[in-house]
Image 1: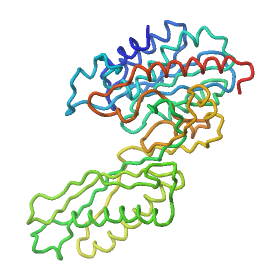
Image 2: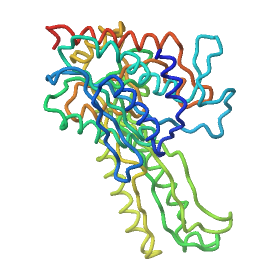
Image 3: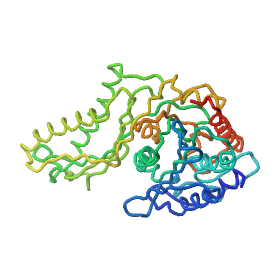
Image 4: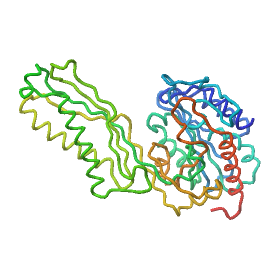
Length: 388
C-alpha cells in the first residue's frame, strides 16, 4: 500500500482522545503481522485501549524507536468542508482529514517504509511505539516507554517522536501540568460581603497570585530563548462560580495550566501556590470555619524535553531529514517521557503543527513523501556496520 492509502485507512478510524483505540491499533497490528513482525500490545486496566510496540531487526543494543499516537482531537463544533474521517484530495497538493497531520501522517510513513525495513540488512533494530490518549495528557507514554525498556533483552538508544515539525529536529518541549482549583466559601446577600467569604473573590485572588508568580519568574531572569515565549507560562483558561449578581458565591472553581521551561520546577511552583492557599484558608476560617481551597490534577504532569544540540540523536535526525535548523515547542508531546527512560530523544515528523487541532486539517503530499524518505534514510543508517 502507498503512504497515501495507508493514511486514508488510518484517518478513517474516528478515535478521539479518551476513547477506545482498539479498532485502529488492531488494524495496525494486523498490518504489521502480515509482514511477519511480532507485535506486542500493552492494554490499559479496563482492556478497552492499548499501546503497541514491536521490533524490526536484530536484538542488538543501540536501535531507534519511532513513536506516534493513534488518537485525535474532536471535530464537533468545527467548520469542516469535507468529511473529517475521509482523507480528501482536492488537487491542491494537500490531503485533508482529522489526524492527517497530527499525527497519523507519521504513522503512515512508518508503515509505508516497513517493506524497506524488513528487507534491509539492519545492524541495529527499529522499534514502533504507538500509544493512546496522547491528546488528553500523554497518558500512555510513560508506560509505553518503560515497556520498551524492560520488554526487550537489548536496549534502544534513540527515540524519534514523529509530531509534525516540518521535518525539522525539535530538541526541547516545555513541561506541562493542568490543574483544577475549587474554592468553598459562604453564601449570603451581596450587602454582607465583609461578613461572608465570597468564593469568587477568593478565586480571583488565587488567579492573581498565579499571574504574579509568572511575572516574578520573568523578572528574576528565568528565561530560555530557545522557546516561544521564552519563559514559563501560567494560564487560567476557565472560571466558574456564582448564581446571581446579588448573591455571594459559595462555590467557584477554575482550570489552569503550567508550561515550564526546563530550568523551572513544576512541583515547586505548585507547592508555593498551595502554601499561599493554606495561608488564605487560615485567614478566612476566622470568618467562615468551613472555608477551603482544593487543587486537583486535571491530568498528570508531562515532563519537559531538553536535548542538547550536540546530542547524537540530533546529528542522526539532521542526516536523515536533511534539516539542520533546531527548534523547540511549547505543546505537550511524549518526547520528554521517552527521555526520562534514558532514550536520546527528539521530535521530528511530517506536517506543520499550525494545521493541527483545527477544521480542515491537512498534510501536504510533499511532507508525507519527505517523511517516508527520512525513514528510508534511517534504514540505510541502521544498515551501516559503523552506526553508533
